[in-house]
Length: 215
Image 1 (cartoon, rainbow, N blue to C red):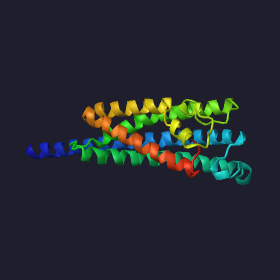
Image 2: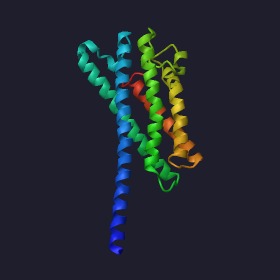
Image 3: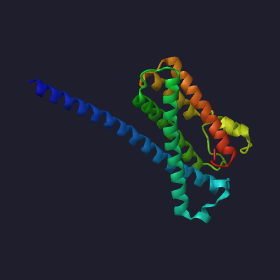
Image 4: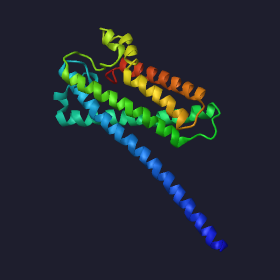
């Protein structure tokens, strides 16, 4: 009887571990899917920008790369860029949670929070890509305050682009998810969200200034 109970407990433990692994695999799959969608949106956005004579890919023209080369490069750039961002953001949040003495750290909840925020970011990118294809304005972000700045090459334009409707909404969702899903204290969730937003701002300012990415 005791042996039977022990075997049953081991089976329950195995099922629990498998279930946890399955949930992690679903989260990774969601991140990959969002990244692939973002890659396609990047292609549409950069294609529209190039057709309008905007400087994309550091001045490399689609005609020089070929259509397939352009598509493959931009999809890879958008997909890998967003997936890398997701993973780095997850790691940063885990480290910040440890620094803020959140114990235990709910890694699954943090990844879920990143996915929740990522959905809004991808939706926003899609909306901007569609608008970019439909209008003649030389702009890539139509849902941000960057529209108020006429000099697209200025640091102010890049800075104002961070005040984007879907991105701000994603930060709100991210903060709420950290609190409700990852079970972080509200104060810590807000602090982590603000730090992530600041890191994102600095990173985008650097990449756009260097010509690495079009914003």
